[in-house]
Length: 99
Image (cartoon, rainbow, N blue to C red; front, side, top):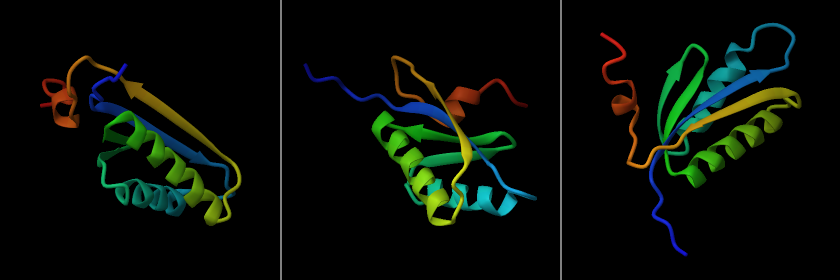
């Protein structure tokens, strides 16, 4: 059975286990996500992306590879997915929630 892939919204939150500030590592995580070509939006607690589930999971894999390539061996990576029966976009998802 073939299914039509509908776009999803996801939040990818990364907490590197480092001594000191993690700002540089997080900036590099955002760069890794941007390099996937997914539409994204940085928030104070993570990075929201929109796209097909397979591309989102590939982005998480890219984040893991990037962390390891930079010598970061320990991190907490959280992934939250929003599944809807219709196409989702970041602006649609937050429409009406902000002023």
